[in-house]
Length: 64
Image (cartoon, rainbow, N blue to C red):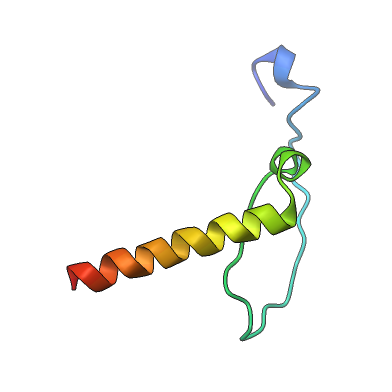
């Protein structure tokens, strides 16, 4: 039970769970709330994730 009563209509105690089979072509998995998907398109989320992974790869290649 949520102690802040003003949050009760917005926070559900039972999460929605979806099972998705991944395959070798999957680049990443994005976990986000419904509010995130209301504001950000799948295409934009994928673009940002891909750019972050590429930046990390560049950073770590320079460090090692």
